[in-house]
Image (tube, rainbow, N blue to C red; front, side, top):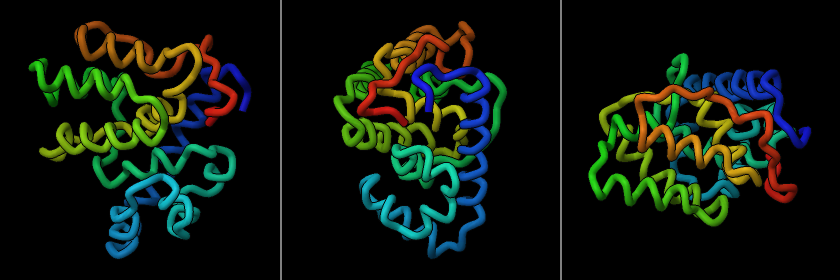
Amino acid sequence: MSETPTMSLVAELSTDLRAARARYDKLPRGDVATLRRCRTADEVAIEGIYWRIGSPLARRQVHLPHVVLHFPLAKQHVKEGFSFGRFLNRQLGDSDGAALRFRRLLDSRDRDDLDHRLRGILRLACADGNPVDWGILGVDILWFFSESGAIRRRWAQDFYAPTTSHPTAPSTSSTPDSKDRP
């Protein structure tokens, strides 16, 4: 993957992530249960089911297990202009507890910490069955630790000021940290 994501690259990645989610949705209940029992991205990555739903994207995106780990928590719905920050604000409100959870999510130190915090906040936000756009959220998860911090800033801006609209893809100035490159 190049160091600067282009809009076409983001669009292709979003499409591939939605396709992986569609394959997940077609899995038998037993296979879904297997992925649901996985507690870490490493556990997801060693399951044959992951390689069936993630292929060929799984070979190109080393951090894809961090996205697939969260598939069981929310249904898929393609929505124009989806923003995870606005979604969380709409679902959780702006109470002190919601703001604290959101702030802790943004302060995640590494991918394992992000997985842990994202799992908790997705459980709360999607408890009533509201879906997310896995194409957009998946790209955000993959690029969350980019050096520019664009994903964190966009989530924060959309959470705290949810009425403004922003592009749903990482800006072209985002460059991933070489060790965290998706």
